[in-house]
Amino acid sequence: MKNISFLEEKLQVKYLIKKLSIVFVSCVLDCVISFGSVSTVQE
Image 1 (cartoon, rainbow, N blue to C red):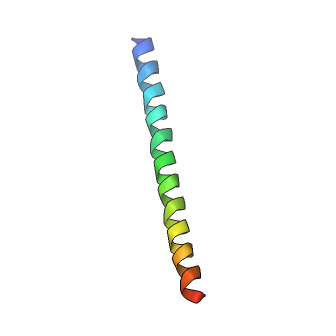
Image 2: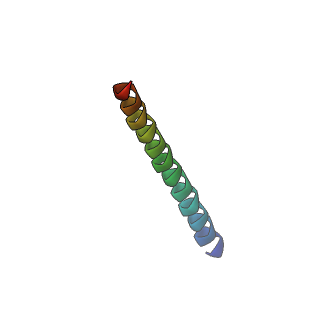
């Protein structure tokens, strides 16, 4: 039983890291698109 809970906890951490990385990449792309469009409008 201990091994199962340890594996479940390990999977939860793995999915949490994956979820956070997706959110981070999404925010970076949003910032790049936003600042890219602002700089082209000012030129």
